[in-house]
Length: 226
Image 1 (cartoon, rainbow, N blue to C red):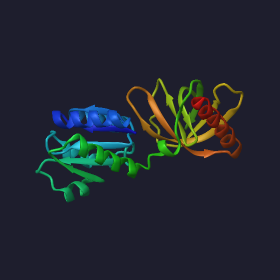
Image 2 (tube, rainbow, N blue to C red; image 1 turned 60 degrees about the vertical axis):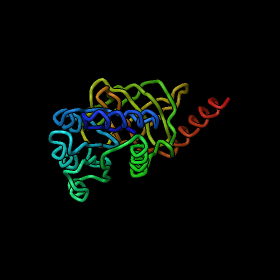
Image 3 (cartoon, rainbow, N blue to C red; image 1 turned 180 degrees about the vertical axis):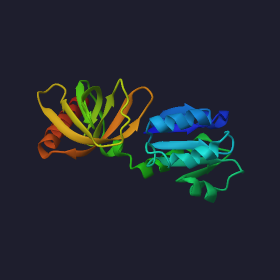
């Protein structure tokens, strides 16, 4: 899961950093509203956490999350400290509300709720580390090269030098690592980060490609056990 946190409150940042690390969540911290707005325009996140009352323009950022294309479907958690009512935060776009003071225990509890709302396809489709080249096509762009980071039956992780700004279905072509099998699929961007990483969720995978990918994953799982 990839999560953006907007806060400069030391206790809040510390609690989310510790909890995210323990739960295997990738945390991206923004301390200013301007920085968060820029990140939300350019990258996709599974979840967005906004410290509304103790961050300048925090409520404005909360209102803007749903207005952008990139993070319209993100799960949004609003952190409140007395100035904003929970019902108002929900009206501004929050899925969940957390009131201060907060602790690592309550943050972990909220992050579990966030994962439940997302669906956590990483549990359903465990990802396996992989290396190789993938070729991504979209719009007028044909076969932009990307590096494979991991593979799962439900999607894949890639690293790109240049970001994909178009919000549309991607056409993917790659060879299963260690084989001569070529997989062709369609996917959508589930998340993207400033380092060039993107997560792809498969939305179209032919029957034969799915069978071959399943075989590859099963072989990797057996190898890990042995």
